[in-house]
Length: 172
Image (cartoon, rainbow, N blue to C red; front, side, top):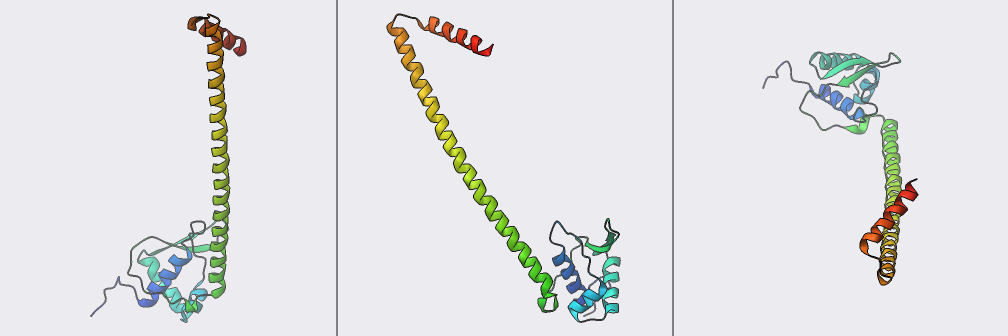
């Protein structure tokens, strides 16, 4: 079975998957690793890593870029390819531990934010109950006042007029 020129080798796909894995974080969507770092990860020569990176750039899977400090980096362009099962045994364990610790810290932060949101929801529910009680008490007082006025022979129109006078006095 012959391979077409555009098909990627096993090592090229592994390198591409490693770069994609390292750039999944939206805060750091670029890869700053050198050819020597990639060669160390996959037990290949740096020259082989350089050739693989150049081929990935030529075929449009990766793009070169630079940041504000003028550091060169690689960006995955999103072009589809057939993935391979990635052997993570050779990847720097310190980097993986750091990524795991970052994920655990983010999880802890999210849990704290969730707890704070739940506390805020409870306080808002308590405030809503308190406001409903105050509104109910106000309605009861209004009904009592209306009953007192009706018992003294004051009509509904006169009560409405008094309420408007009180509102204009309070607005001023």
